[in-house]
Length: 342
Ligand code: AHG
Ligand code: MN
Ligand code: MN
Image (cartoon, rainbow, N blue to C red; front, side, top):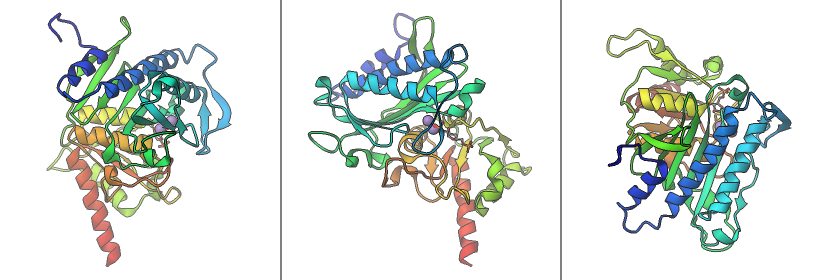
């Protein structure tokens, strides 16, 4: 609350935060506000998805060969449109586009940032009215002039200057970090503004929820299978057995675990040796948020944020959430390796 005794809006908050950084130019704040604007438009369409002809698939597949929902295309289009007209974004990579695009509008001539995004995450849940989201990751561009290059996008997650997501759930929230804590804003539909509702979110060190698509159990490596059995056992030391909660939207599963404490796993399987999730616009942004909130994100062995991306759409296994729970999985995976090494 501010001195007028009303909630602080996202725009007010980013401006207030800027004052703490005397050298800040305000460009990053403007970029986050542009994403917030696009999110409001996407939210409007998501909310009426059951009413209009926007529901259903386009009948085409995206570059990963997955079915593309109409709302995926709409969300991609809105994000690009706001990022182009906002003037702070020099280039965009998206789950829905095979190649990145360079933004060359008049207003964006001096843009310093590139954005990687999953415009609509969990899209298989659209038709059944279950929470979905949008994910974004922001880097400073490396190339100095002209069109952006692949080098601008293929940066380690450690280099992100900001990351966040929007969850279209029972209420709509925008959660972001610029490397100084994680803050959450809930959309107040009566005024059409994101209002600060969760300042400086910290993920509990430990939790009692695990989120994984257990249907793939037979395809997981032994360390993951052993961890799943551990979650299910009665334990006197912890609150085991844990509850299994899996929505099938990374944003929604991550958000719940962030607030309540828990772990989300999308490990490698025999048919998907690198897992399913994309490093640049799913894993890296979530990993930065997790670490900023006091949690951890690994691919099994290494920190997600330390991985050097080679291609725009590469995948990586993801294990993310409460610190102690992620460390426990790492222990199980190490044990498995030791057994294999004999
Ligand atoms: P998207 O809708 O952007 O393709 O992402 C879906 C992802 C992620 O959100 C979710 O956690 C995971 O796919 C679910 O995959 P499974 O159905 O294999 O569990
Ligand atoms: Mn996704
Ligand atoms: Mn998507």
